[in-house]
Length: 556
Image (tube, rainbow, N blue to C red; front, side, top):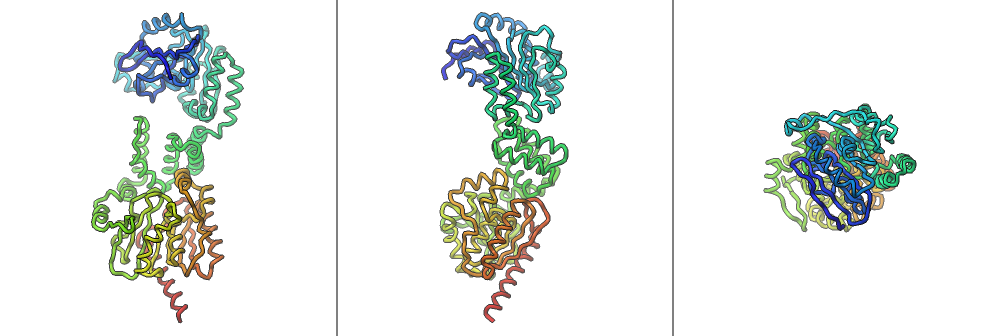
């Protein structure tokens, strides 16, 4: 894109850049940047789109969230007005949030013909006076009755700060202002309107002095609001305030299906999970937050606040132990001493000269972390720890053929009847798959067995992982070769119930070979159900005894 930029003013707080599109135009957009802006050298708020459309831009940019207190240069504003008046018949102010405040504060001195204010607000930040004690204190006054600027104002009346600004300015009653309420669309409203592909069309209606077209287009956009991740997040936030975390989680996950990078929806989901006490997902969330490298200071602040909230709610010591076991000294020591590579796959084989082998399998989003490595390091069984770095449900690109080959030497060493595969959720699928293939044993928790059923009821990041798998195979497509003993624990989460029912139907087809104990748990969370390591070992002992009893009956 070819354009010419002139720096008209710059200090450490504000820059003013006159950017010419190179096309003939009598319209100038004077834009003010919102609070998250951090550069003084950009094209300004919405500048790229406006320049591409052939309009010139006067970009007034901020380096921090000062709400225009340091920008009170009356002489500069007068010179700008004098300079630009001979060039442009139409001068349109455009801003969002803090930027919309700038449009409102300076519309008269800049002699704006039109003003587009998206969610205007004023926040009197204490640090402003500390950083710039000489800055001007703005007094928000009602829009003067003699104002000739045509205002187009959009805001969410359920955002208290924005609603307070509208009351102070009386924009909703002024004859030259089209002030429209968009309930639950969130702050700032531009995010949702842009997501609904409506924002640019609304700007064009302003350019053409078409308030009726503006209103009609806005009504049509608002009818589509449920397609906006920001609208769903805003409604979810309201439900969370009303102590309905489960409903908030549902809306947050719907929002993330629409826009996976929506930080507002992500934080809503975190807050709702914390409020609902969803322990397993909170652990995963805490681990994810530790790995995020935010590009914006505001997002970094949000992340730190959520981590602190989680630590207060669940205890930092427990969370660190559960979420970051991979970084503990004992974990690293075991890996250093025992990790090996078998047929190209890393694994840990702890041998105690026992008859039975437990295969502990890494679950979703744990990649190369060995599951339960510390907890199982001292149990009275041989243990093989395996991982799934590709997050592919142990299918890889070959429907598990490479894993089958990798496991075969262990099957030959111990015998399938003496091996138990253990996994939860994604790893539960893998554990069942391997047990069915070899005629071994499995203890699983909330295992997924049918990908289509899972897609309908899972959360966004799990759906993304499944969609990345090149070829999937439901367990119902497998034909068991010999006796397989399984303990199948499941909770009341819709995804877990659907998969349990699907697996129960499958078991009925092969009831002579499949010996499955289904155990329901009352929790509605998709969570780990076995409690302590001792509880798990009790299940292991029980399952091996059942297998031995069945074997004795066959050969007696």
